[in-house]
Image (cartoon, rainbow, N blue to C red):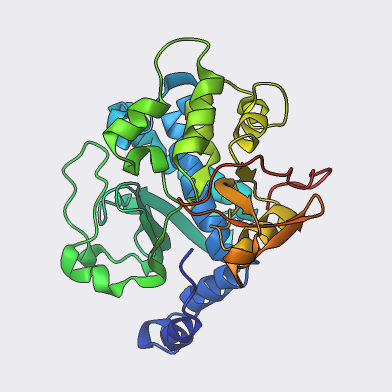
Length: 327
C-alpha cells in the first residue's frame, strides 16, 4: 500500500480552494481523521470489484467480462460499501453526511467518467475511480458548478466534469495502490494451470493458486474464484488434502491477515498480507551456510525464506489463530 503523503495533505488544507470552502475542508479533515482510512478505502474498492465479478459463482476475474448492467450497478455498490465500512450518516439531499456536510458519492472505472446528476450542482461530490488493470485508485472532493460540467446527452441528463476543470478536484488520494487482482495480472499460461476446468476441482485450483503465486498478496476474491464455493476458506485450512497441509509438505506456508502471521511474514522478509489477503512463501531451516539471513522460530526451529537453490523440506505450522478477526 502506498503511504499517505501527509505533507501533501497539509499543503492541500492550506490551498485557496480549501480556504474558500469551509465545508469542503470539514469533509476533507473528517475523512482523513478516520483510523487506517486509506487502507480501508482501498480494501472496500477491492472487495467491491470482487463482489461484482462474483468469482465463486461465475469463475470471472476480468472487469471486461461483466455485463453492461453490472458495470452500471458498480457505482451504487461502491456507495453502499463505503457507507457500510465507514458508517457515514445518510445525507439530507445527497448520499452521505460527513463532517456535518451533505456529500454525494460518484464512482467510475474510467477516470473522469463520473456521472453527475443535476441535483448535485452546488453540492460536494466524493469522486472515486479505480482501475483493476492499472491497480490504481483515486478519491477526491469537488464542489459541483454547472459551468464545469459537460452537457448531458443521456436520458436522465447526468453530466460529466469537463477535462479542463478536473484540476479543481481536491484529492484525498491520487493514484494510490489498489490491492492487486492477481488472476488478472499473471501470465495466461500460469492462470490456465490454476483455473483448472471442471466441477469438483476447487481444492486443486486453490492449491495451485498458492503453489504458483508465491510471495505476492492474493486477495480473498481470487481465492473465491479459484475455489468456486461459498466456504472458500475451508480450502485453505489444515486438514487432509487441504492447501495448508498439502503445501507444508513442499515447504510452503500460507500466511493470513492476522497479526501473528503478518509479523512472521515481515520478520522473514516475505510479502505481508493486508486485510482480506493471503501470502504463500517457501521456507527452509536455517543452516550455518545461510549466514545472517532474517529468520523466525517456529516449532522450536529457526526458519528463513527459501531461495531456488534450497531443496524442499517439510515446513512447520504457522501459529493457530483463535478468535482473531481479519485486520
